[in-house]
Amino acid sequence: MVYGSHGMHHLHKRLRNYQKHEPYPSSDSWIRTIDHIVYATVFIGLLMSLPQVAKVWMGKNASGLSLVSWVTYIFTNAAWMLYGFVHRDKTIFFASLLWIFVHLAIVVGIVLYG
Image (tube, rainbow, N blue to C red; front, side, top):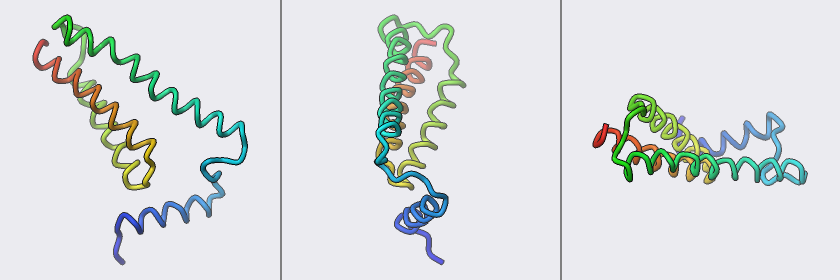
């Protein structure tokens, strides 16, 4: 059996149908509202990380920041980005990509100024 990105996407859709998941976008306005709230949290979370980026790059100060933690964040977001790519979920893919850039900026700053 050959597995490709098309096959995995098809399998993903079959599993969603079999498990009775909601179609996206949902016809229920409450669920669409929750979807929008989740999208907003991605950007709010990114905005909350920007002070760390500013502290490292503008202040040239990485004290108190853990290199291991921020590198781990990069790997976990890379896994989510891969998940979004495999399942063709643009929201997960691009949100994870943005997180990787923010975390990478912090990691490079920690290496330079830590």
